[in-house]
Length: 302
Image (cartoon, rainbow, N blue to C red; front, side, top):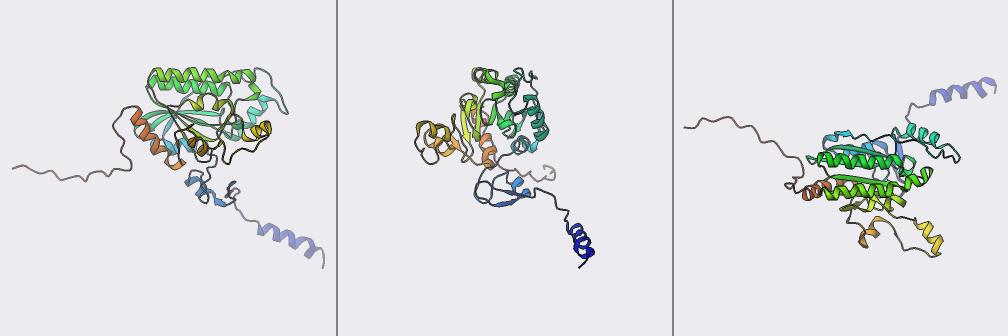
């Protein structure tokens, strides 16, 4: 044995054995542990084919799956003063915002868009849990106001997909003020007789649950979503008792009359089409693709 066999040969083998394989080709389901190919996950709208677990989905992917042809336009909101309290924990709030924006590609935790759903113009708000846990701050409040104002302007229904850990602690009382602010805005929808539908996703908690997330004319929820104000661990530690199985999950809330329906992600669009046409008193929507009539040759009448 010499330095060639001990060092050079292993080095050469290591170089040529490297595979040009992209990372993140496989995604592990956190519920059942099944390994899923990334394209399969994307085609299934980030729902596990093994156990049906609904994973996090980006706002863009959700909107593409929702709007006709995947076409929609963004609704802009007013900018807010960043870090008015000059908050700092382990990191400055401004630095935390900058890092999160770089990772997610979003300005804040909510995206507002408008497009057609079942040939009906709709304004849609989607919270992004990947952006600081979807926490509600002044920017989220401004987005809700902008979305509702857009609905009032164009006379469209307003659909909101909630996903949040609650109010954003870095904005303190300014964050909590978005609760009454959003409630007042939703009241203006009611006064204009425009539908407001909420879809609760995993998780929806804290101040978001205590305000706009539970005020829908119709409230839907994805399966096994955690929906609560205080989480089960906090409650158990407070009352020192074990909570019932599935407590605060969407199925439990449906059973106790807190929500109207639990629905899988792939069926949400068709359900929204049906509900929106009923609430807007439009002709009943026709589901599925309609074949075009074959062109008939013109005939000459005798």
